[in-house]
Length: 450
Image (cartoon, rainbow, N blue to C red; front, side):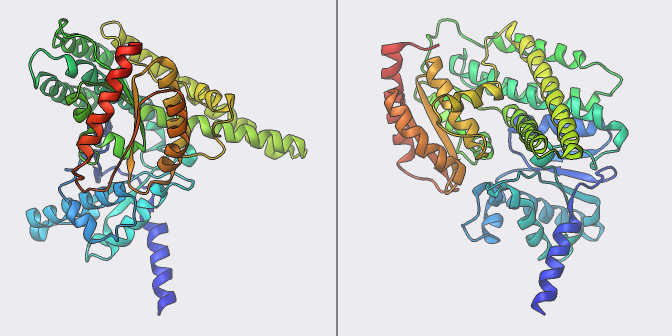
């Protein structure tokens, strides 16, 4: 009997988690980056897919009910989001509720990070609730740099990927615009209200976008938004210490999961820059090209010419994809930097060189630790006044990051703090961040900022 259950569970994961065509379904997107998630939903709607971002964090108790506390915190948050959404839909629709009309969107990554197991565990939980076993989970994977092949018709893939990538970058840009203007706003609350309205405008622009329209039409609206946002800044407010954030991508990005750490840092006098979502997407493309290059060398050495050809074509594909992504990213940032001096992203190849320089870490290990360690070193090199590492409690890549960065930042006399989250409220956290900001301000007084 136990073997039958195990086979059924394996079959459910293999048959109800994958790259399913999302056309004709209601696509449910978990909120990670508050802005980027809504822009991505707009892109799906622009391609005729009924996509929406689920309400987030209010289902945390449900997520905890079906987990043991050993899981990665984002797994608990996103599980709570989908369970609460389905509970409310059942109550709203009653007998008309049809679980087969919904598709839950949960990407994954390979390697030692537990992110690769979220959708598998979510599948097991959904299958344990009568009716919800019919809700399929649509996924993308870092193994192919998040290709959308299988989710939408082949004829639409190229156009979709182009505009979807731009939506992620614009989400990053709007975040960085917010962090640039909020510490210097003329009146409290102006920046938040402005960015909330800007997000709605850009989401609608992406929803109205069609492959026949040029991306430039979206960039024109972005330029208008940036010019409006610049007017919020009070030029009489002096510069503040500059703080760089690294860490696990979900928790550092999801406002409620990190209890709005950026706002807390701003409360004590900071201007903050968080690592971007686009950086992770560029990293997955870069890493696929890197792995293909390694395979190419090994196959040539072994005279496996057929495999060498396949490796070369794969290397060429991902290298060209990365160059295209950089080109689009540069185009978006150039539009914004014409009006506001926001930070651009690091190039992934440069970050690998930073790690190789002193043999600090290796891309062979993988995970976000590659980006976090290298980015923190770049923050220090650029003259930032402090670095914050935000991550879920027990996160392996981020604890690895911490073990390497703590002594390095101490050696460079750069204030550094780890901030982990698991949904609990720690009474000493604000005091720790306030102390960190005091140290950052002393660094700012001695060295200035970039």
